[in-house]
Length: 237
Image 1: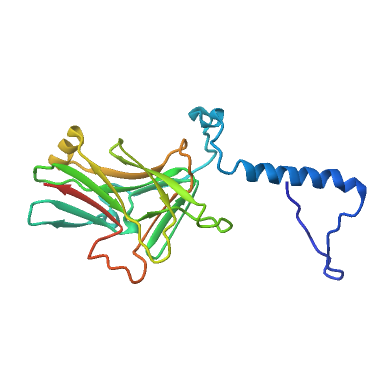
Image 2: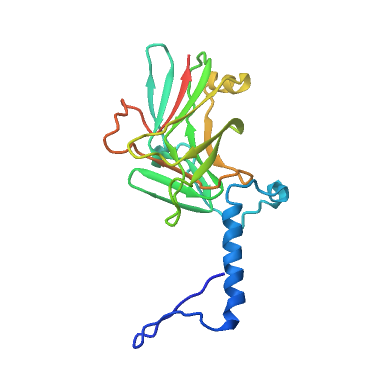
């Protein structure tokens, strides 16, 4: 329930509830606010957690063509023969969210959806014991929400292989949170060994308990990144 107030430029405006007819309305508003405060930390009803009810009326989406140079990472081969693919935030290859946006050094999507990066095809074959994904991921903070309340549930998919989810809070002042996933599945490692491309997807699924999107940005000012990038994929030898 809400009111839109349009003041008269000549008179200004004000609100008063001084008649008996308003008492019932005010008591209903007060009762509703008390109920919302009481159930703020309660679990969702089971019928709201049924996946068939999670309908998203509209999402904005875009995809870069295969081989687009603007989506290519920086590639480093370490002395131990491990390969590290380093992505800037804007080198994403695809995005789909209810709201999307980007700017200098960051990219975001709000609500349910995903942000995807692509590890390009490789000509040689090499041993891969583990795939490690690291990312500087944050929730998309609404303008009217206190930072301490907002979190987002981000699930990593690598070529549709579910790597698990992380419940990510807003970074405390002066701290930098980096999420890490380690994947050792045989079939996934075989793809990496053969040099096939890998799609790295950071998703907020419709059935997530916290739907505050994905924000990937450059490191905050003063943070010593030690030459790391906000998104990295390591193929550990």
